[in-house]
Length: 289
Image (cartoon, rainbow, N blue to C red; front, top):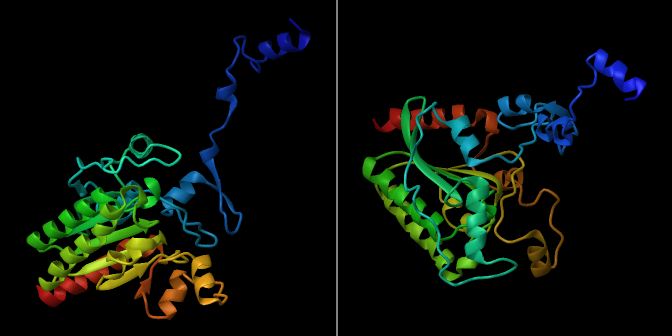
């Protein structure tokens, strides 16, 4: 034993037993760097601020489970249709079998598909809500997403509850072909019946909200809310530029651009979303009850 090791052991600086290298690594998630302003912050500060940078208001990506925690009263969330899961009707394969990709996504996220649906309350006001999760195959809309949202809307209509759908999606799920595109019409049809019953429907557009989701239920809300600087689009920027042979503005397809052109009603930071939804729900109940 070297003199250095002997002295270190005497001073309790170096344990006698070998330490695994993994135990010497500090968890990477302890400190988070903002992509916009480069602020380095302790992860608990970011969590307590709804994953919004306290310096520049940059909205970090977040999960559907976190959004349930941020928006609804504690322990009020009651999931519905959690048992629904996609199959592989086309036997689709790209770099990986679709069936295998589904299994991997379920293990990675703990979700059955790209949306959670349930009944919950905001300041004791009951609502039906669907929350899309971008972690599950880019929040893509397949048969299960469409079916779960349709069942949620029908339940909301039968119980006469306000409806909220929080969107985060890359669009229709190509691995299910035409079956995924059919969900646009199916969900929109259920929303029509909900509207005919004089019940409110709020959509919340987060980054990104694109493709078939934007082309259907995302833009059908009675009040359309968006998070700041969210990407909201149907087709990609390059596709549009190549089609119209013109350069688009730098802020094109952001929530601010859409707000200025009348496509959305209000931009609400994530930290204020719960209180804003409560105000809107209170206005509805004071008007009709």
